[in-house]
Length: 241
Ligand code: PGA
Image 1 (cartoon, protein in one colour):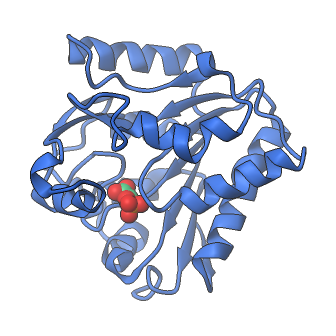
Image 2 (cartoon, rainbow, N blue to C red; image 1 turned 180 degrees about the horizontal axis):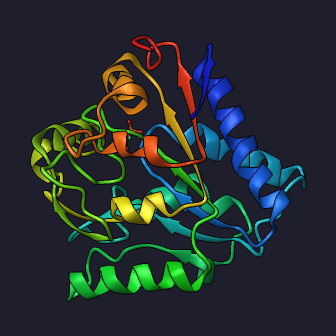
């Protein structure tokens, strides 16, 4: 595991943005696994910046997002569709038809999850997966549990995640209680993984991810078994390692 610590969130954003764009420069038709939440926003800003400068071209890129809420209109500002358009897709030249999301409004969510896995495979797998981490150690919406869920699936969100995410909604009651998410197996199959963590509230989860027991109680800990993981941390997130 490659652990990089930075002084500021700005620096992490720049480094992460370059890292993602470096993948696209190496392989213009890269398949990017993308994440939502506050953590990746500055990395996306940097990717936009590099695109605007003409340094990188996303016209052959395909993307798969990690997760989406169930029963939330994609036009709702809190949907992950809207988040990705507002923070990245609307400012770069990735073709709309190359953008993939789990559809949280699908009639048959199990089938939707199966088809998502098939599509990732058909595209040759994810070249680089960008990840945040929850304060409870979740990755995507893979919450602490008694076993690892392998492929994309429907989840009931934990109280702590609903609370963490309520800052984006008008009230905690508005936060959806279910989501569709890539599974641990889907994430582990990505060829490279980049995790960003910012803030002391992530420190415990980061410690467990780096040298704790590998357990579904901290889903991120499974990344110890991945051969190409880079962590970009600020001092707060790195404070226990
Ligand atoms: P955050 O969420 O970036 O909003 O902290 C990360 C996550 O829950 O994966």
